[in-house]
Image (cartoon, rainbow, N blue to C red):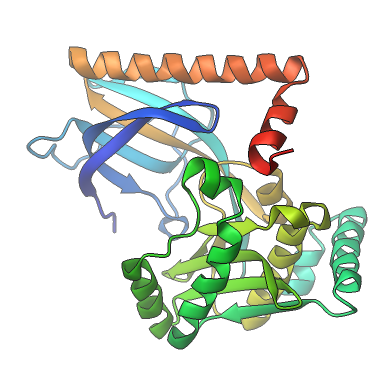
Length: 312
């Protein structure tokens, strides 16, 4: 069953990872989940749900598509804007861990094993890590995870670290009471160095918050923790999928067993204001990509990112 929500959706005007400003648009929003088993579509269609009073249109997140869509088109008098198309990565946890390992090449398995072994040697022979799943464990997890999050570029530059509000922690405790959350921490002695927080909905774990201490970047602590957590999830045998959500990265592609082509689709009323907003957003997106490509061509982009993330 589809669950639509009616709320403002911000159009973020960004340069690379940095949001310059945002303009909210009231839309009816549907996020398509892995368990919905929605078949791929050739072209987006106008949803059957009537447009609510005050709504400017629809946003369908994670719509499976048969092929790449045009960025801007028209659908039944609505402006169809597709700002994001990506391979939706996920892990099918229904197989055995032994079968999962076979999806990796022998070279990749060897590389992962070497990273785990190298980190174990750094820690004195044993990798120290912990799973948090019970209500009375959540506050300890957030206290330690926040110590790592405060050092990450996601928090320092993007304000996207793991939350530590009382409401968020209380919600995590309520999820834990229903066995609907898994959280993980990797340690170097008593020092937390990487975290992963995954809420669960209908048997699907969501790759929600993650981070690592930049001092440990060369030890691949994020990869080490991900591997340990996935192995445990397979052994546990409780969940259906591990969902890496929207967007793409080498990390997601490495660990995923499946990928499906998806798109975020805006279907908005063709008013002068909405049309200007959509084309302005598209223009900023293209300028941002051009700027990034230009900096990369001159060998500057990686240096800027390293300086902003790690201060060196």
